[in-house]
Length: 222
Image (cartoon, rainbow, N blue to C red; front, side, top):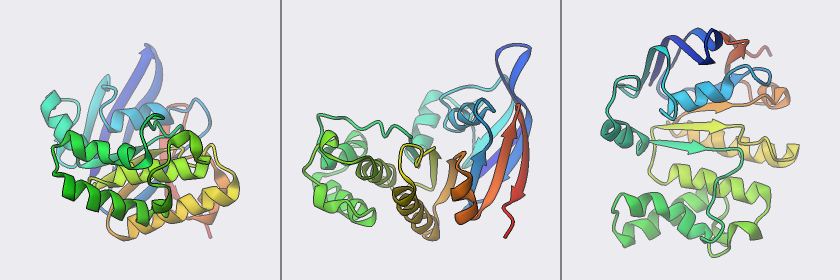
């Protein structure tokens, strides 16, 4: 699903943010990308959905070479993935339904399919009762559920999540993690950025740990 080879990235050479980073995520895996602040996690996250270009190296995502692909090919790839952000990035003047439906509307899906699919994903994340409310009327945990539903609505093969529990208290964070585990159990590959060691220990998965631009992989011990 994802293969990163000898990746290098710098914003002010020669100070490297990422140094010769290589790793692989297999289809259906759920892995964490972790490390201290400033380690390069967000930079790597942005590289994985082609929001940034690497200085050198290769990033293959679902068969697409992000360092060489044309804009139209990357746009098609993004329709096969979902992205979840720490700050939700919901449109405050849109209802829950409209925020989630937007991705399907952009792709030209018929209204009947949009209504059916939006209801399904809202029910999956447990937020269907809030379908007509606006983001400012929701709690942080509810807004993150809407953001996850929006990422799910196109039935993605891959979900990238950047600190999706970072603004939530521990109890709500665990609820959000259980949603991600359920999504993964149905075959969706998940790469999640987090620095929350309590969640890493509670929900054990493979960890790609970044520190000063270098990456190592390990499995959290029992």
